[in-house]
View 1 (cartoon, rainbow over the protein chains, first blue to last red):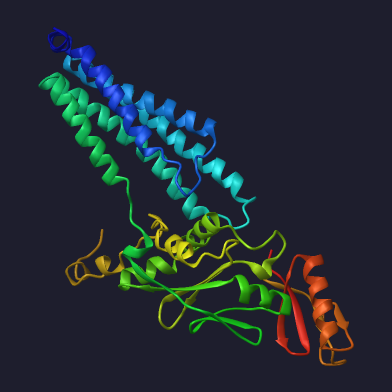
View 2 (view 1 turned 30 degrees about the vertical axis):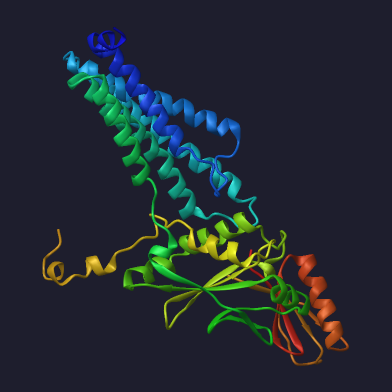
Length: 306
Length: 59
C-alpha cells in the first residue's frame, strides 16, 4: 500500500529521497577528525545547512528537467556560486586564525581545506541528483541503491592520499654537534643557547622522509607541504614552545644532495609511536603534488606546445 | 631577510660594525647575556664560535 503510494508519487519520492541522501552524504563527510576543524558547533551548523540546500537542489533538478522545465538548470549554477562562497569563507576564517597558531597551517594547507569544503558540497549535490534520477527512471528502490552506492563512492573519493604514499618515514635520532643541529646527515639549524640545546635533546624528535620517486622529491620539497606536516604533528601532540621563541621552532629542512626531508619536531607529549603515526598520516596537499616525470615524458617532449 | 640585532662576545676587539656589541667577562656570562637578549628581543641566539654569539631577528 505504502510502496504503491511511493511508486505513484515519483516526483515527491525523488525529491525527498534525493535530499535525504545529499544531506547524509554531507554529514558523513563532515568529520571532526584530528585536524580539529570544524570543531565548533556553529561551524558545523553552517555546513549542515549548506549540505541540506545542496541535497535539495540536486534532488529538485531531476523532476524539474523531467517536466521539461529546463530553466531549472540555472538553479544549479546558482548553487555553484554559493559553494564558491563557502570556499572563500573557509579560506578567510582559517587565514585569520592562522596568525594565532603556534605552528601555522600555512597558505597551501588552508587552500587545500577550503577546496575540500567546496568539493564536498558538489558531491552532496551529485549524490542527491543520482538517487533522485534513479527514483524517476526506475523506482524508489533504485533510488535507495543509487544513493547508497554514491555515498560509498563519495567516501572513497574524498579520502585523499597521505605522506606514506610518496615517502618512507623514518625516525632518526637528533645529533647536536656544538651549536649545529643535525637529523641524520641533514643540517637543520644553529642553536646558540645551552638551555635550548637541552630542551631539544630532551623533547625533540627527528624524522627523515625519503621520497619514493622523482615526483615525490618535488612534492616533498614544497614549503606548503612541509608546513602542513609540522602543523599536523603539533596539533596531534602539542608543541613545546611559546610565542617569541624562534629558537624552538619545529623545522623541516631539505638535504640538498639527496632530496630527503629532515624534520625536527618538539612535541609536548613525547610519544614516539603517536608522533610516527602523525607524520605518516599527514594528507598530501593538492597544491604540492607535482608530476614532473609526466611533463617530461619522451612522447610530449618533441611536440610543440600551444 | 634575517637581521643581526645584537652581538655578544667575550673577546674585546674581535667584532665591529653596525649592530650593538656587548662585551662580557666569560663564556658563562655569554650564555646568560645571550639568553636575556633572546627573551627580550623575541629573537634567536646563534653561536658563531664559542666566544661569539649573534642575536638574529627573522620576523
